[in-house]
Every structure is written in structure tokens, then in C-alpha cells.
Length: 142
Image (cartoon, rainbow, N blue to C red; front, side, top):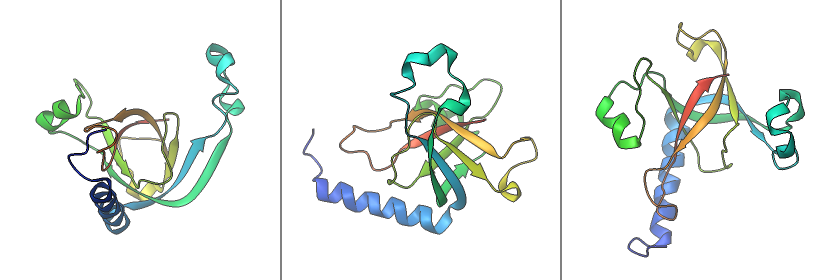
């Protein structure tokens, strides 16, 4: 862990991130898988109904539906050819993992998507783990 920025300062930055998402985000229902370790042995034969989810109602999220800035995407490590990825920013609590998904109200969804469920398919880490203020998540229609 690098001590260039004190942990207390990072925590303050994280609270500012949470405040911004509270102010500008939209309400979604968040579902985080809680039994992935127990069903890991069935990996190739896993049915979606075998995964149990913890439900978090009325969570706030900021979604960027059409991330078109190629320079920004390349800095994040995303190389999109034909389709602009969906990027999302959540609050720092609860911890979001791969396989989590959200249910968005239809009024916030662009017309090109025919579903209201979007799954976390990638975690984009921009800084070191200890100095990470917020995480960017790549989403895909579920």
C-alpha cells in the first residue's frame, strides 16, 4: 500500500463520490450474488436459478449509456469497436461484484435496449486498490 495519500483523505474522497451519486444518480434495484462459492463446481452447467441474490432496493447509480469518447475509453482499458459500452458508477457500499445486476425503470432506458436488467460484466480499476476512490463498471443487457 502506498502512503502517498493518507487513508483518511481517500475516505473523504469516497464520501464525496457517494454524495455525487446520491445527488445525480437514478434509483435502481440492485441484486448481488451471495452463493457463488457454493455453485462454483457447477460452473459450466450452472443454471441461473441456482444463484441466490441479495436484494438492495432503491440504490443509486450513475449510468452513462453511450460512452463515445474513445480517448476516455482507452484510458479505462476498454476497446469498443461497433458498440459503445454502458458504464456505471455505484456508491462504495455495498460491494459490487461480477454477476451483479440492476433493474432500471423503463423511463431511464434508451430505446435501443429491450430489457430493464443490466449485468456487471467487468470492473474497471483506474488506480491502485488502496487509493481507489470509485470504481467504474462495464454493464451489458442481461
